[in-house]
Image 1 (tube, rainbow, N blue to C red):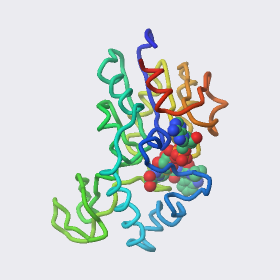
Image 2 (image 1 turned 60 degrees about the vertical axis):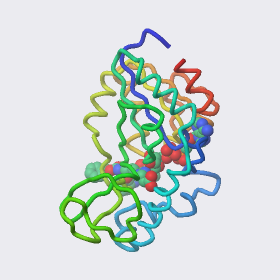
Image 3 (image 1 turned 180 degrees about the vertical axis):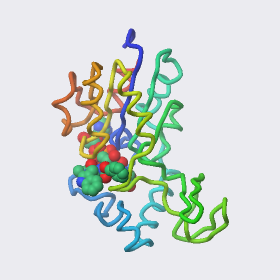
Image 4 (image 1 turned 90 degrees about the horizontal axis):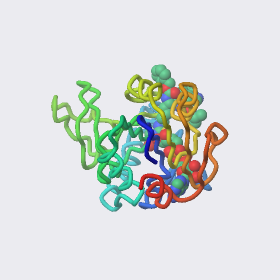
Length: 229
Ligand code: BV8
């Protein structure tokens, strides 16, 4: 891969699978043992905040037990070396891209290691357990910090920035996503509309495979270094 100037990379849970982070739509269709409607919606949080906070506390705690895999490191190398525009848009809420060296990175669905205080609106780095109702580090109000995660029905972050990058890119690469969730699943069509080439790197055909000029099937840990290097 050499002459192309501007690149947008979209990643999903599949890029973290080889690090031991479970994907969402596995054979049983459950999210780490939970139904998505029970844990990833504002209604779920209003109905049973302890269940939701505990679900995210567990996933946050697991981050300490997993490491970036060769796919994350390959994107880190790309980020360091690429002279053209590059934006890595991840749907993932883990911190493995950062730990793999990515800098030009955007978490469109939020991050496990970030909190959002509903009393003062501040977003702030967060470690530990929200179920213990910690005080907000900004306004000190207790019991108002929620996961800084985009739930179903909530607007993904920095969509204007993403749309601008998609309209200006020469190459759109999708890695490890099922193409099941919008607006991310529609990015390939936007990129094509503006004339970009499109490449999918995935274990299985996704719901959006038909929109890609080229699809390579396999594990991200093999496909991404082969593409980058
Ligand atoms: C929005 C954070 C509008 C949570 C996530 C009714 C009401 C409101 C909205 C809707 C509605 N009906 C439909 C919608 C739209 C909805 C949507 O798309 N629903 C789907 C189910 C139809 N979208 C939304 O609600 C979005 N917001 O529309 O807002 C709006 C407008 C204005 C104002 C306000 C609102 C928000 C969606 C975000 C939800 N949050 N995550 C959390 O993480 O807990 S979504 C979650 O699933 C992930 O973040 C990810 O984005 C998404 C898809 O998952 P994937 O990453 O693709 O993972 P998956 O397991 O599915 O697939 C893994 C893939 O990897 C597979 O293909 C597999 O083959 C592959 N793989 C596995 N191993 C490997 C591999 N590949 C390579 N190597 C391997 N080793």
